[in-house]
Image 1 (cartoon, rainbow, N blue to C red):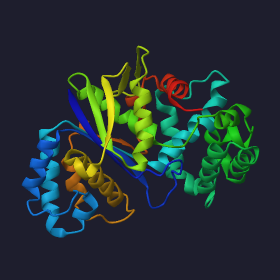
Image 2: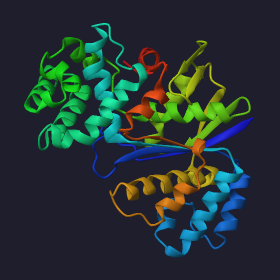
Image 3: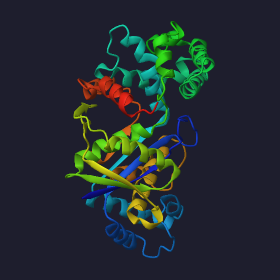
Image 4: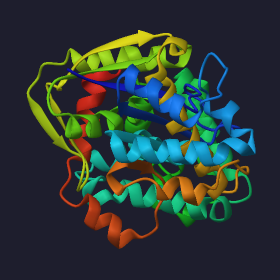
Length: 350
């Protein structure tokens, strides 16, 4: 049975505004430890460390060409998928889900139709820092994150006040439900047990979509024993044990079908798994490239060369886009609302 090894980077739990960790992602690769060990020996014959770690290797310029060659071999010779999201943008999408959409739902409007939520979140991401007033979007998102985490009357009231203190009339479609109406349906959605800003489920859902598509049959997943991946492990177990027969179409190219082909998930010590170490290299290089290209901080490898190694189907990203016409086409006729509802009902822990 095929095995995908996965590793993650950038996980900060509920806090999606962490300035040091702008991006979150995970990588999966179908490779066994013997193949992985051979590739590591081939590209790093003088390696003396107990464990192959991207961050440590990338510090030395002499390793850069070797890292690029290793990534090229992984991406051309093995089934791979990498997912990266801008956490600030993901938080805005969550704001649309809980602080905006319930208002429209109560009025019989499908807020997700043709990706309207995605377009509005992208518009807010790009124009909000200027349009809403200096610092207003940051304060709004911080209050939203706090309200989702604490679910207290004080935190919910603080969120409404932050919306009202902004120049919300510049974009009433997004901020009006809170600022103008203090919509109870939105506040109730935010206060619902199990609703969280933790991005682990979003990351896993995207990885699994692709693993399910490229796996030839039943497969299993192996990942590191890190504290961060314990959250992923628990979610994977719930997804594996879900036995309802259903297919949900999320975009033009992404859908998920239950029951999954995924059969089991195992935790290992990454020091004993060369295959998991290669997943670390993949996600480490991709997150670093994202940081470089967005001006967060300069990476060590050439970001353009790293991303050029990927085929389109090997790299999934959640980033803002103001090409509204293309986004409408890409998301036309999808089941976004049903997917969000289904995952909330079945996989969010109360």
